[in-house]
Image (cartoon, rainbow, N blue to C red):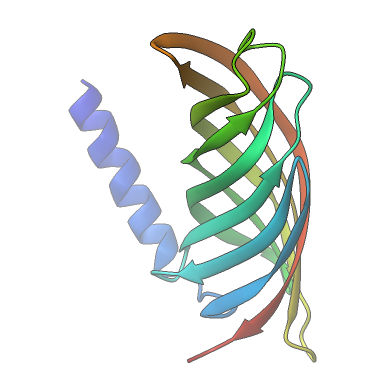
Length: 164
């Protein structure tokens, strides 16, 4: 049953992807929100993109450096506006925080969903994006393991677009 569902979803998304064209090939810029740093996005097919964000992460239970990669399906709403949805994972060291007790450093592995909207300006090479990324974070330190709900609810990014 799951295999049939996956095949149907793959066929539908494949059919949708032939009806639209990616708004650009690559974009690079910055991101602010629960992760603050750099952002890179590339389209691997007309409707499928990979986005990698890297920088510092702030949360009430732990902060740290992070790399978050996401695979997303993106579809046009109207000229210039796009919606997207997908998922990804994040890795990086975590510092301080109420989760680790006396240990100042832990390792974070996270799984997340991502959804949001993007606007690509027609006359200038700029895209603006807002997204939410709820998920789960797993912290590992000194043989201890602690899962946490990751409420990375809002990020905003601005990226320069180019087609090479």
